[in-house]
Length: 336
Ligand code: PHE
Image 1 (cartoon, rainbow, N blue to C red):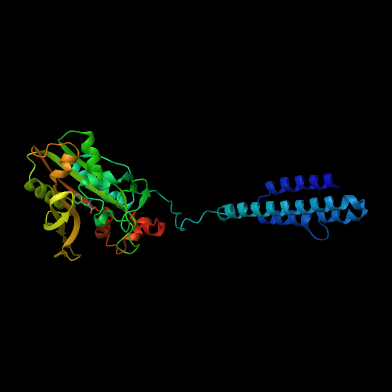
Image 2 (image 1 turned 90 degrees about the horizontal axis):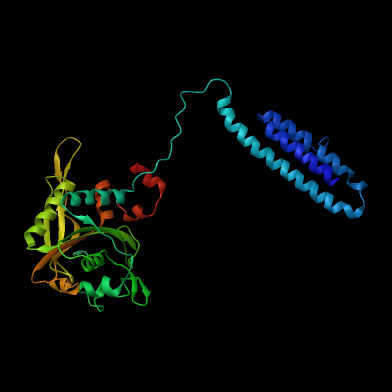
């Protein structure tokens, strides 16, 4: 009996595979699984003639065959109904085409690429460093004592044994200067991590771009002029740039850099935006240069750190920073 069932199953599966439309599949269903005339039911009716000890195994096998045939019918039905749409008669040319998913560059990556392209044309090269770094690179070498508030466990994600998730890209300054003698002109984009609350303007993981210049005779004028030139190339020639005094342990003097952009309205008239902070920056503190063995009497430099997601926010008029890091396709597909 079990052998008969298996033969039935084989026949049914072959017929299902060969069927080309729903009608044919329905006929097969009735032929094999129909309650009265169905071949499987017919076999089951003979269950009573088996020795009692053979019945459970035969019954179980019959159920398995029923399920397998039903599943195959369903699967094939799906296939044939998908092709039937196009099968009957001429195709309907008025139907909208199916949209194909295409990969695109993430809006934050695009900002990084654009910023990088400008600095590359100004003679910068690209540098990188690890996301897991030590207290030395993230703080101490950057003239930031470990009892500084930035080094507090409230703000920094520690991994133990002096290791942490870097809280800014500035450790790449140290790693680069340790490896290479001046002159240095680098751009270092990468992810950084902070114990921030997750809200519209803060995410615990976010991208940063570090810039560093060190050479003989580098002055505050180079610093201001280069960053102003960058801002005008990035946001347009009408962009105004403002340097506000600030503090960072690794730069002296330090500044926060704001830009005021010119926006062209739809009717062609122009409008100035508010001042918007785009980066922290400053002249490299001589103590930092000494920490990497540079002669701070001979060399000077400047550095900046900026958040490309904030820039993407401005660029696209997005109000919530989290959208850039949540990978929701409904949001990202708009930048295709
Ligand atoms: N590392 C600073 C921050 O994350 C930014 C910065 C970089 C400031 C370089 C000055 C120079 O806030």
